[in-house]
Image (tube, rainbow, N blue to C red; front, top):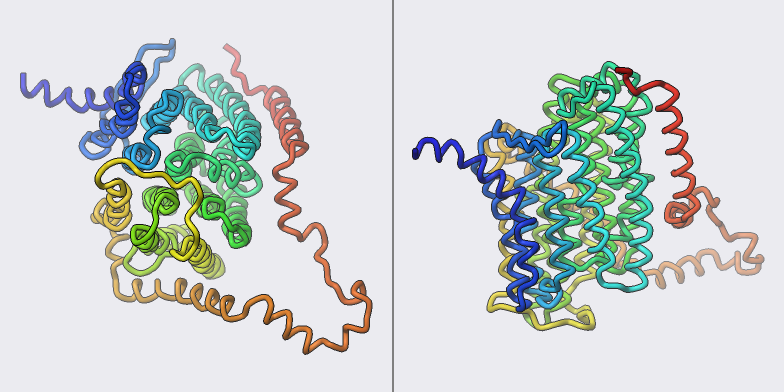
Length: 563
């Protein structure tokens, strides 16, 4: 009996991970706010146990549809599940400490649990229908979290988020329907990947790229991201940026990467170039931000540029695919933990005064340095993983140099964040008294995870040994030092002094009319102008037209397999 129980325990844990968020929903009728708030950190605990203890190959099938729904644990699921469960648990705990009345509100708690349920379904899915259902549930529950503050900015961001996510959902639905039809009704990932590889896959690939690019916030499809993340409540921003944004990468690995050999020659260079542009562009936009949460939203866009690069490198089979897959696993954990810690830290900072504010600001340095790839942090591990993936794909020295430059720009963005949140800044209005004896404990535990977990979790891989080498650690000093030098130069050269120097040197121009010497960039080169266009409803309509044309192409190519 004990042996049978031991064999069935992994399946029980897997079932509990999927069902507990749903089972907790009726308990939101509890009378006390504190009771409802305590449910948020409890819901992901079985998922955390699954990530830590359930062996790969454990599977659970639910006969709820004619094709059924399949769930299980494999290497991909574990790579996404561990950081996701940990971030959901600690962010939910922190929600009850920062604003217990908000965390215990039935609407907020229900949206939180539904978003968590969808995220876990998507991560543990082993067939395309379960993946689609999980992503859709998570996406629309997250909309409620984005607009929960009910401000004008939140509703504007929510409308943009809804429009772009509806576009993504329609594209994903059409692609899934075409894949299932091409696979003769089979829904398992292996079957649909084979159908994508052997069929007329151009239109389907276009739909998948559009859907997952929108979910990921890839360059050109990112307009919702820097608008939605800053307006959401702080704990919601932490899980949006740390966990849910990775759904696009998860879907790409499940549906496109297994059949990537056919698309790699055409698609891989495009994705690498798009990722590099996004990584640099978002930093330029983020450096002008004055709100720390807005800056963190642009930082997420920049980091998603790195994921876009890896989405291209993971397509060809062989050592390149394995190296890119390992880099994705490292980056999912590294970015998720660090970005969640930064969002929660900014929220904690706004609720702190006096000496506690100083300590919180000092704590922000740890995840900021991690994203800057400073020595001793998980950012070095992520940098090594990216370099190995690029080398395995046969990338030249130019790509390596550009990726090294992304470390400098990321470090600049983190220095800007630390400057905006420095202790002498006035705390935000509306700071509230936090609940509990140690209100910052969940955040401290998350900081500990940022510091230790990636090194421990990947300790058996050669990446850790290479990242811990003295030469690698010494080389990691270059990017933060370069960013620090640029930042100090900017501080020592204030705008007024620069303007006065220009006036002295070019005094002779004063006699000329301003129109004669004023230099204006062409409209096509003004980043702010482009960004406003990306946020416009006309562009959304144009994307819908393009989607309609893609649908016509799907029908025209006869992707539906005749019985």
